[in-house]
Image: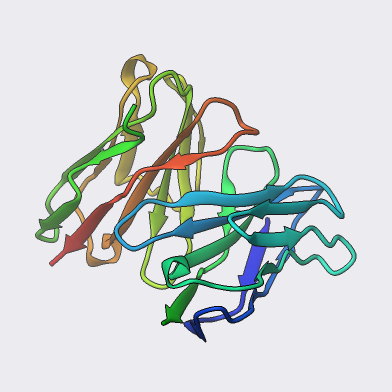
Amino acid sequence: GDSVTQMEGPVTLSEEAFLTINCTYTATGYPSLFWYVQYPGEGLQLLLKATKADDKGSNKGFEATYRKETTSFHLEKGSVQVSDSAVYFCGTDTGRRALTFGSGTRLQVQP
Amino acid sequence: DTGVSQNPRHKITKRGQNVTFRCDPISEHNRLYWYRQTLGQGPEFLTYFQNEAQLEKSRLLSDRFSAERPKGSFSTLEIQRTEQGDSAMYLCASSDRGDTEAFFGQGTRLTVV
């Protein structure tokens, strides 16, 4: 089955720092890839998604590029804000029934 | 529409008791999913409904677990004879098609003592 590996957290950054959260996957076929975010006290929300190789998903200043050759989908943001503090989940969507999530990476941004 | 609603938000129960959780999906979403999330882990798939039909169950869903979605609207997840290992956050999500965004509820946190 599918599996997703994310860098362990917590990741602690100062405001306006550059963010990278690494994510690699194994999957059969050609899955879509996604990042979900969970803010404190809230449910999971889709942050961005890419459906095929070399596609770039972007939202709220975050970006991730679907790299088939390295089976990666790293999340980046050029300048983080305190409000970005949350837990970020990478995952695959093979179009079957369920999504496969990584274990999550907690981001803490300090003012 | 207020999104996916789950009740209760928290449940503490004694080992061996039965518990039932409820999920109200977004109106007109025909797909409904249950996931379980333990501390420090991502959500793990439990089961999936399309309308009232339960189409897939994970091996994580032991015979103590049962889920229903009568009339294709709200869903319930029941755990019989709870064990300490059942302590987790139980998440519900809904979508209107398989290739669109799944919207998650805030979850029900179960603690078995």
